[in-house]
Amino acid sequence: MINVSLGIFAYNEEKNIRQLLQAVEEQVLKKVELKEIIVVSSASKDRTDDIVREYEKKDPRIKLIVQNERKGKSSAINLFLKEATGDVLIIESADTIPAKNTIEKLAVPFYDETIGMTGGRPEPINNPKSFIGFAVCMMWHLHHRMALISPKIGEMASFRNMVKEIPEHSPVDEASIESIITHKGLKLKYVPDAIVHNKGPENVSDFIKQRRRIYAGHLWLQDNQDYTVVSQNSGLIIGLTMKELSLNPVKDLKIVFTIFLEIWGRFLGWYDYKILKKIPYKWDISESTKDLSKS
Image 1 (tube, rainbow, N blue to C red):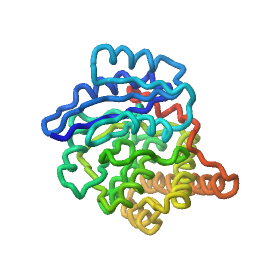
Image 2 (image 1 turned 90 degrees about the horizontal axis):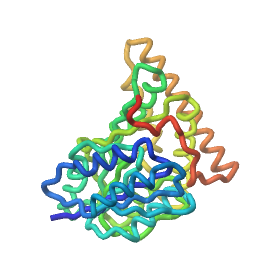
Image 3 (image 1 turned 120 degrees about the horizontal axis):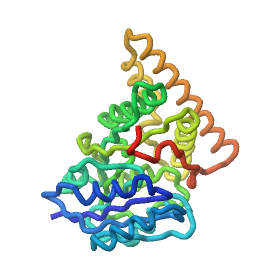
Image 4 (image 1 turned 45 degrees about the horizontal axis):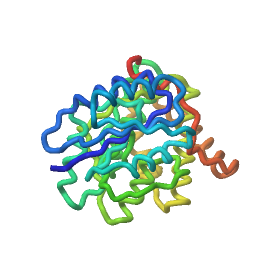
């Protein structure tokens, strides 16, 4: 039976960490074993550590690692990689919630020895009736459509325990792992029914901040790991976006504004990386994405 080590990465996640740990403990597992749950808390100043310690006392699989200085998620992942002992490693941000069978669905494909990494389908809880909620849902819908064509891993990633470390200054941790796995000759697999719930930004400022940081990170990845994610394929993105257009003028107007925000975010990301030489590996938090109990 495949055994799994789960890494959870937190920075001031008191609003979500309890329901996340509850969801992890309630996972339905038949073909895999969840061996350990390692929470890396990076200089959290709220009640995150206290809440994790409550669970640590009750569940011997849970271990808290406190990082005294916040050095970015990739640095926290490297701490997890040093401690994890499972055959398969799963990394998950503490501002997400997996569906009850997500860990099983992410791990089962590794019975095929050609598979090196899997990713599930992020589903935002944002209300699509608002403009920014529509934009968030549309971006993740396009992510899903792209991943069906060429696997694109995001939000919750699973991979064989063969990655010793990732570049500490990587702003795009899952993509950095994608690069390492594919360079080892193994395949990526998208598992669309492995659902992980997340929450996108709830205002334009946070939306642009997030898209800006991600695009700068992908430019860094091209330069430093010689790897390009599928979302950098402009032709594919344009084609998939055009298919979303309809005869509904309200929906189409929202799509046009979403495209504008994405273009603006990418321009700012390009400016940050190419002109300002900024590497956003320790990014400013988008506070509106943090509480999954609210949508």
